Image 1: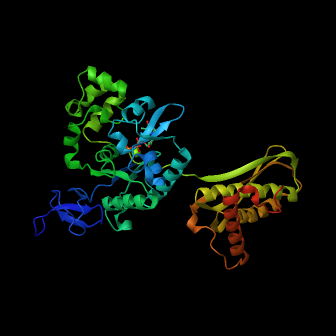
Image 2: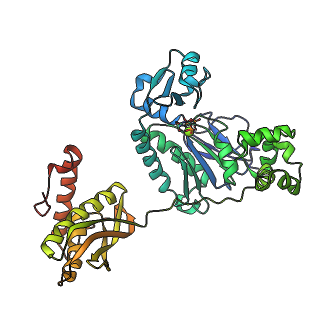
Image 3: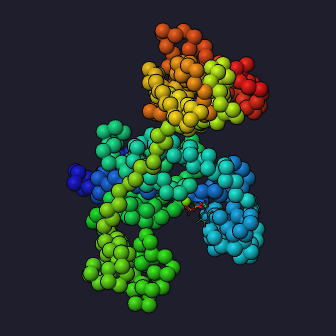
Length: 426
Ligand code: TTP
Ligand code: MG
């Protein structure tokens, strides 16, 4: 307790002031904001669940501010159901997965837009990049939500995880233009429950101290995996609340509900041992082509190689990656595979550099053999910010990189075929 009698670790969601508060709806002493998060375990909890608010609808409102004050439904299409709706439409009772005719009845003045999945996926990727800056322990679970384990990141970020998460929410709002809700706890099950407690733009914490009491007030449907069927089955057995599960022994739950019984037992007591699974990262990006007729001519194969390098480079650039290892693959007429690779000093994402190294590997293999397939691969990835650093020993490299970037920009605007190198087949 400090000298003013304040003892609950707190922070302000608006100015990030970190202070000891009284946990009693106080205002920020720095900026006057009432948006204060207080919790005794605020600086020891590491597991977060972040979920965007009314995801598709928020993106459409961002792109057309005239929609801001209106009820907005994203849906229709072939299935004729609501994908999502904004929080204004929700006050009329509209919900995801509801048939459109019902939604129209509940909220006849709502604006209805069809989903634009391409746009939403692009936003999802941008958000994902923000998460990736925090830690590699990110587990995306749908287009608009992810688990993040921030254990051990306090030193790196210079603040405890809750504050880091608050900064992330601010960053997403400022840079992407939509809001998210954050749940913080000591395991995945509770973090996910927490993120749903105070939507939209929420920040909720469930700590060790109150987890069991909190859960005791929830219906069994809150337990991950309890769907309609199990809910009905348990209801028939008279179980509707988690508090009831908290009093049943493990053996009995396993006997009645099989492997799910174990989950019911542990989750109802606030125990979830699932770890955050990092997304399987791409290990290699490659492209290959089978020749129309077996060939061993270097000049001919080199042209094919250039097209492959361009494709691989495009994918590296799209995924913001650069590669330190470049591999050449050839298949001989009698189906023997030849692979050769080279590790380069500075990672690259440039077609020109891939080609430069690929060509050298190829030249050595053009020794009289004929090939039926040629491929180029890249691996050993780095973030693109480490890509194509100028090389003092090769003054032409900088020009090559600059030229390729200029070509990429032109292609972005006018399409891939607007510009082609002479070395490409036309
Ligand atoms: P959710 O996160 O479930 O919903 P939401 O982001 O729209 O709203 P909330 O603030 O409650 O999180 O789903 C993310 C997106 O997935 C949602 O914007 C649209 C899509 N979706 C569907 O297409 N159909 C569905 O039934 C649901 C639930 C979501
Ligand atoms: Mg959401």
